[in-house]
Structures are given as structure tokens and as C-alpha cells.
Length: 461
Image 1 (cartoon, rainbow, N blue to C red):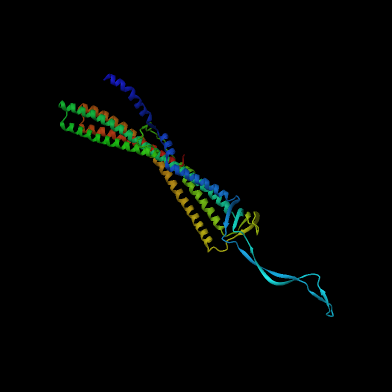
Image 2: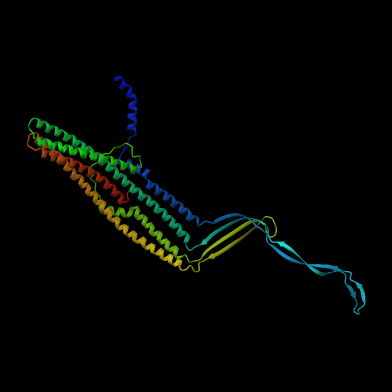
């Protein structure tokens, strides 16, 4: 057997070491970093940001000349022809007489005389037609439509940046909250296990007293019942801890089977926040407010564009072509033309007026939405600051409760050993200490979560 164990140690030790090395060691900062790296919502926000960058580039392209080119080939079933008429004549000599009517002879110069009509067809084109064309068009003046559209694209880009910042803040809160919930569940499980072991020792003590006739059977039965009830609670807490770990891994975008070690303690922080200062910071830094302010500016620019929809626009355009046939010759040749023009809608069925009214309504909606969200941000920032202060007080209160419960249990143990305390009173003291320790852990975890929520409420990155 000893030789077998010596042979298995080199095999099993690397496996155990590898498993330990694969364990993910997490603290709150690492959890937030992993969540920001793997979160799908943030990946979607980054894709929308890329889309907004491309949209701004497309809006800038409207200022530049628009160049297009094309090539065509056209095959006609029959080329157009024009039927022409031509006179058919004959050359003859004409007799010449003097003024008295005397014949003098024939003319020496022949004279053409029409004697009929001939027809022929003139082809006006070719059945094979080739053309290569190019067009350059430059908008000159649009009453600010292009510049306002470009400004809207820039504001849309800023809006998406703020949306990404908002998504980032939300992911940080979720990762922090799930981390401390998981840490709380594990610490609670440890407290419950300590309480279970302590109660086991008490049950053993009651059993010894019962065996020596110093305790009643009822005391022993109540002690065992309390131990069984606590064992059930320990199992429930352990299951809950596993669920919180699974939720944490899901938030971090990791495999649910990843082994995790939480390398952080619930520190007894007690820093408080100034509600008025929190409100000021929220109004200055919250990405949601920045988004709505950009939305108000976009709506205002939309009104300006709608107001100029019926005004004339000026442009210049040049066209060049290289084609075959050219005129009536089956050969390649070039041509060009240039145009300067003004376009203006004369009547659009009042659609431009309705678009202006709609743009003005959107502008008013954006202003109202901004005011509403500002009020909500003020309330949220103040509420989160007050919640943090309350959790800081709870940490202090629960710490004192734990100290009192520990002292009470020590006294109860001594009094029970000396027969001055009933088993039920001892069980109550033990339960009070367990509850106080769990409440203290809850207060510490809630404080960390409240701090993360306050950071989000004031727009702190």
C-alpha cells in the first residue's frame, strides 16, 4: 500500500496543482474589469459608437464634390433612318433665236432640265451604341442644411459616447453588486458553519450532562432539534452561495463551471456622503443628462433644417462623355457640358410646413424630458447618498450588536456549565449571536453595494 501511494503521488499532485492554478481568484476590482471586458451590452454600445463615427463621416462627405461615372452599351433592333428625295435631271442643248425670230443655232452650254424624282434613305445612328460618362456636382449654398446635418451627426456621436458610459456604469454596479452578494453568501455560510460546530459542542455537552443525570431528556431533545434546524439552514445557505456564484459568473461573461475563490474581506467601511454635493455632481456628470442635452440640441438643429426646407439651393454640375457613334460617324468622340442652377420647391402639399411643426414638437418633448430626468437625477443622487449614510450607521450598529451577543454567549456558556441557565436560554443566546453576525455581514455588503450605486448616481467613472 505504501508503494502504491508513492507511485500515485507524482500523478495526483500535478493534477491538484493544475486545478488550483485554474481557480479564478476574484476581488471586486477584478470582477468589474472582467465584466467590462466581456459584457455583451457594452459590446453592443461600442458597435453603436462605431456606427455614429461612420455617420459623422458620411455627413461630412456632403460638403465635398459628388463624382459619379458610368458606362453603357445599347444594342438597337434597327437604327433610325430618314427618307430623302432628290431630283433626276437631263442635260440638253437649247435653240437660240434673235429678236426677230430668226433661228441662230444651238447653245454652246448644256442646260440641266428636271425629268423626274429619285428617293434614298439616310441612317441617323448605329445599332451599336457605346458611352462612357462622368459627372461632378458641387452644392454651393443650402441655407445651413449641410452644416446643421453635420452638427447633428457630431451630437449623435457624443450621444453614443454617453450611452456607452451609461452602459459601463450600469455594468460596474451589477458586477459590484453580484460580487458582494456572492461574498456575503460565502461569508454567511462560514458563519453558519461556525455556529453549527459550536452548537455541536453544546449538544455534546448536554449529552454528557444528561448521561450524568444533570440534564433532562427534554433539554437534550431541544438541543438536538436546534442542531437539526441549524443544519437545514446551513444547507440552504450553501445552496444560495452557489447560486450567487453562478449569477456572478454570468455577469462576468465566464463559464458557469469556473472555480472561483473570492479574495476579499468585507471591510467595516463607514465613510459617509454629502447629499447636496452628490446632487451637484450628478447634474454635472451623469451621462444620461449629457445624452438628453445633446438630444435637445439635435432637436433644435432639426427645427432649423425644417425651416429652410422651402428655400432655394444653389449648385454647379459638369458632365463629360466619350461615346461611339458621334453624330452620323461610327467613331469615338468626346463631349462635355457645365451647368449652374438653383432648385426650389414651389409647392409640396404643405408637407414642409408639417415637418417644421413636427420638428418643433420634438424639440419641446426633448426639453420636457430633460427637465423630468434632471428632477429624477436629483432625487436619485440624494437618495443614494442617504442610503450610503444609513448603511454606514448600520455597520456600526451591527458591529456593536455582535460584540454584545458574543459577550452574552460567553456568559451563557459559563452560567449553563454552572447550572444557572436553562438550555433554552443558552440556545437563544447562540441564535442571537448567529443572527447578529449575519446581520453585520449584510450591513457590510450592503454598504459596498450602496457605495457602488452612489458612484453611478453621481456619474463617477
